[in-house]
Length: 365
Image (cartoon, rainbow, N blue to C red; front, side, top):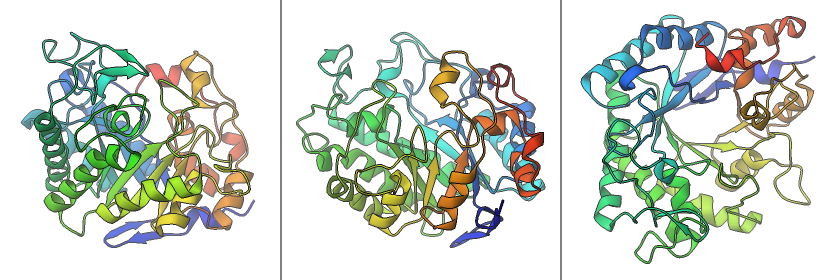
């Protein structure tokens, strides 16, 4: 098994990674009152020590009262939470790792009356939780503009703390993706209409982040076709539509596109073997991260049903890495089960990898 393409260094400006592996962002919920603990710092440190080139943290909440419905999801604002994240950064850097926070707002997936500020109205582009199902009130134009500033402030704090970049969560049916998706965005101001107009919220966020962090701080943008509200949803049905969608985001200042698929090996469009990250790289010329069931025989939906997953070979991953289809690969549940997954793969010790079980979800191991 030739893993050399997986262990080639990666450089983008000041971001220098030892290899092409990324720890995928995975919601954990072990930060009481939004504050990451010493256990959180140790959890990330172990993965850096285990060989991961770049860690992208679980989703961290921007400073908005309706950003979450869970008081144990980590905040990215406030003195105590930011101090906790600084300890995480120091722990990861102490073993030579690199780390970025993923900044997040869950939007209309938040249950009314939940979270740290139960009285806050749930934030949504049009009040829709799915097609034609209105539950909440739409955000005003001024409120949307305020949210843009909230994302930018979180990114600024990330740079101040010493993170190596920032990832903006624009995937999986959360707030930014709710703006992208026609089923949940029927606005008539500049943030609604065509996909180009529905992308304006994300474009303004990227531009505002770039203004706050400067040119030398990497911005990663995570996006997906599928939504947790509809696993078959698609924003772009053709490569032409994908080009029209990605180019403005690229021009706005995205450095790396993190393209989330349920199964990374699946082609995105008929007539081409390229996956979603492969197409994004071809269209934008920017580096891309691929992700989706790496190293396991079951996709993540099985985990939501309480199932485990057995270790699977990575031959198809290595083939795609060899062909330079995408630049980086994110590993999720396999890293929950094996903090040293990367080092074991590098050393040819796949027979020592443990399967993923529900125990790995319920504990911060």
